[in-house]
Length: 127
Image (cartoon, rainbow, N blue to C red; front, side, top):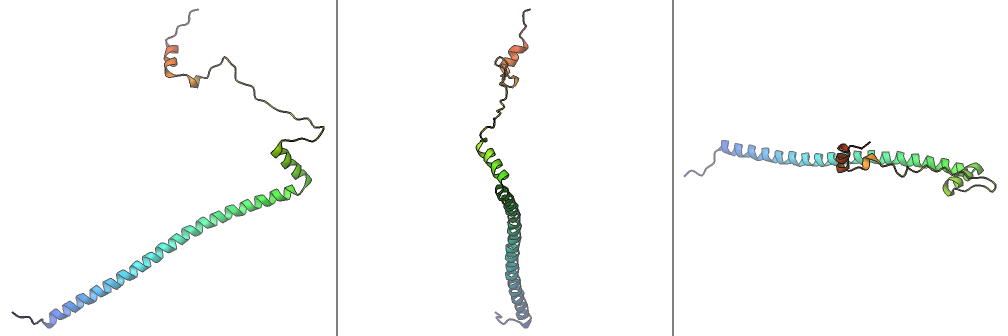
């Protein structure tokens, strides 16, 4: 049995070892870069969501500022009280509009059952 390893075999083993070491280092670097990319893309999505929320809140703020400015005037305050509490000044008359009710004898065609539709189909009225 020849247990002596030739110089060529040692070089091949060393080359495989270096290759595996470089492959491991490359894999570790790739994994770190991938995690960094995922975190960054998550931050970008979060930043876009927060920017949209900020724009919405700024719009709401300007709306509320207009309402506050309106309520500082006598007319704006009176208008808000009238709409919220449905009140009128003394001496004013209030008009209430009521929609007419549906006729009592009138039936809605959409509520008919399919059986009623079949019965009406073959119903011959006697005249």
